[in-house]
Image 1 (cartoon, rainbow, N blue to C red):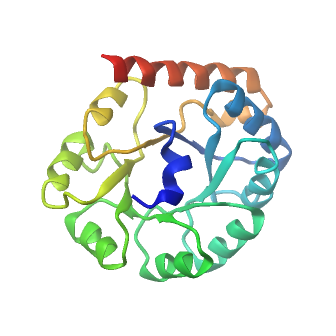
Image 2 (tube, rainbow, N blue to C red):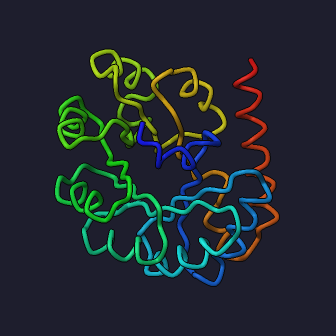
Length: 212
């Protein structure tokens, strides 16, 4: 795995965030740090994404990346704002190559053997698996990891407290993306106490799964 991704998956969970108001970004980052998950993937699903990234990277200890990156223009905006990694829902050769030119790691979305093989041809050894549950879940990743034994996965999509253990049981999975610790409605109203609580609960859940 690209060493630049170490801070991204260091805590196993990667909060996937949708921010509608960049003014909420700093408070969100502080809540994640306080809860024990100083990392976030801010999705480019809203106009506030780049500004939110710029605010979150100023919070000490935070690792911030951009998600739902579909174009080179979005990649440029994300990196200019301070994003240190990129994530996409699908696999775009153009965007992957551009990430390389920008000097940042990228986790492109894959769901099939063909897409994973293309990712390897582009020089990648870690990919996003999306949408995880719809595409077959942990069992699908385990099956794909057999022929692609040198690839690691960061699944996202439909993963939560109830099925997290299934994913963490797969050796090829190095991290899991999830949004349950950052409810969009809670972020929208600045309810960061809830975010901190859910984040801390998520961290404890990972610890208990690892110890089981």
